[in-house]
Image (tube, rainbow, N blue to C red; front, side, top):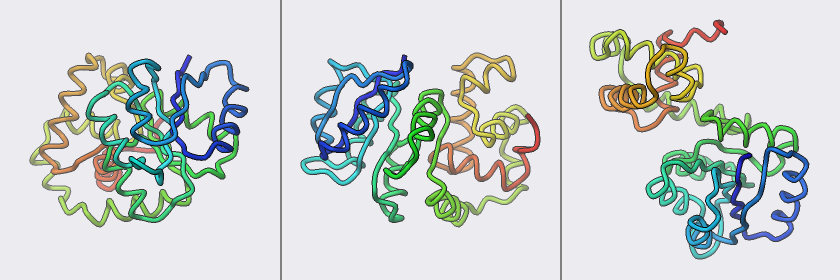
Length: 217
């Protein structure tokens, strides 16, 4: 069961989400907040696994709330669900720690699938914003292939390649027979060595330099 806290200031949207998510027995809405401050206040009592987060809200917007949730509750994942696809909203939300970014016109089945993917450690992004996001990240990445070869150990390159396929730390650990904590340490070391801030930037590097062979299963 995935416990979901919905954060949106539009009552009609919240009611619609109740109807959509109630159709799947694996999902349960445990609370509804009308702004980011409400969401933070409700988390201790609701104990959500995932926050479905709008962005433009009064009192505390979704970017600010996402940042605080990710800092205070590392086990809670944030999936953005918004009408805003402007670059600044997308980039700020991802930088704040959002694990995925969807628009409110996302079809019902895709929304449910994306919630489950986010809970499992994947990073679903709406196709209309994914291209701009990756273009932006790629423009920021300047490390050449020789830098990756020189800076990373063979194990770190293996972890980076699997990260580039979209695998979570737990999935990487199972794939290469390490503990999840060890993988987490490798990922932190990779971020530091390559000067990247998040999994998306690291994944772009892995794909760009052939470490993530996307044709493999």
